[in-house]
Length: 189
Image (cartoon, rainbow, N blue to C red; front, side, top):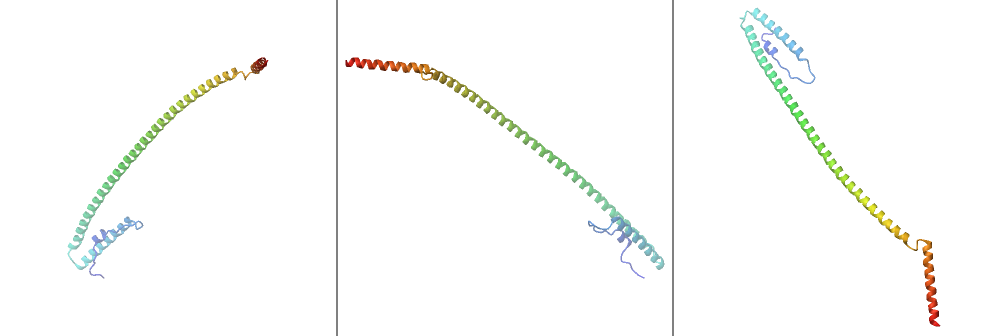
């Protein structure tokens, strides 16, 4: 039988293990450690009774357990405060992200509005230019039409255009030629 136990029930109850992504359930480990601590307390109590030692050691173990429980309670309170702080930080981050998203949306809306306004101004300038070009074309066509009409009237009045007038002119030349020829014959005689 073991004379001296190096680990106390309080040590078992307050043993903390590191956590990992895949590991044992904390609740099962805690349950098992509590059961071991009770069993060790019972063994210590039996040993004390059998050795007739004063009951002070059992009470010391319980006092240590109370101190350890108080420390655990403080740790639990600290963890709770840390969780609250983490929750507040998370809420602040979410609020900031929402504000930034709203700012990005507003900037995008302003940029879109500016692009639409610029496009409208450009379309209006093109429309004005189109109207000006259309008016210039209308004036050109009107002027060209008038000039063509005047040209047609002059061409129609041209004596070479109508066959009868051409014949009259030819007859006039022939008569002038005969007159000149007769004058030369008369002058020669």
